[in-house]
Figure 1 (spheres, rainbow, N blue to C red):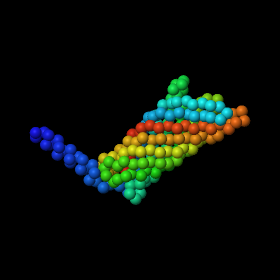
Figure 2: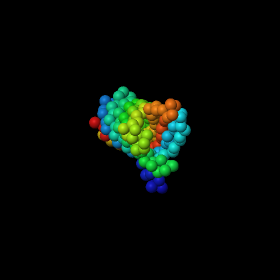
Figure 3: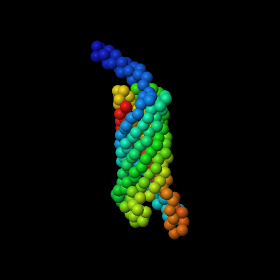
Length: 195
């Protein structure tokens, strides 16, 4: 009985402490690091038709600023490593993302939505890439949802689900325009140091 009462009191204190702090981080800068994993596929159509699935891992270094209401603007450099299911080959994407993060609350646990744009290079090794100096450029549309957890004033943890769709530069095969897109999604985990 005493243990049950103690557990109930601790649960109430923890729950109230999670929502008691009104912390937006406004007027702070931060650096962050995220790692993630997920799946995606390349879709090429036009003069040729190809669709290949892959698994990916990524790492991302972020610099961000927090504005009014906890809204954040982030600039991130990320590397994504692709492993294709069909032949096990490995390729790499690298690029910059410019994202807006909008939290729903200023409590310790803050759900949020994210949206943004990016510029990427597909650093491949096949004949197609060597004829283009080893890489192909593209533009990305980013979206996501996640949870920020305020640990202490200088540290936040982040768990999110992110979606990215990269549209690569157009090229021709046999005189026909070819469209190439790479949609991918997955989970990301990371942290931010506020200053």
